[in-house]
Length: 144
Image (cartoon, rainbow, N blue to C red; front, top):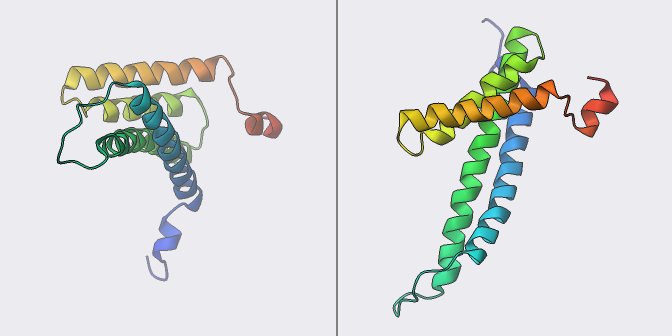
């Protein structure tokens, strides 16, 4: 490890893609949380709380934003790490990443069966998307 730095040990593309996924999840979760908050019946207005609906909307937006940011960052981070480690880009990377991300979200409930079920559901979704050839426009242009 002589002469190496921390920058040499970290794959910049992995960090960039994971951060990008977390940012997109954060933005999408904020918008989705605002929609959910607007459509859901709010709590009764308390006399000692200023702007109760605004506070409630902020909490709901924060919860959804954090959830989708964790989901996106976990999925992309695990998928990219496996791709770099295995030197392959196939459905296995997506399946493992999907299970990890789904299980991470399922553990928030606090029950292991829920984590396994949500991980399996997200892994199956990822495999089906890979198997049917669903690609983004950038992937189609590159010819992947």
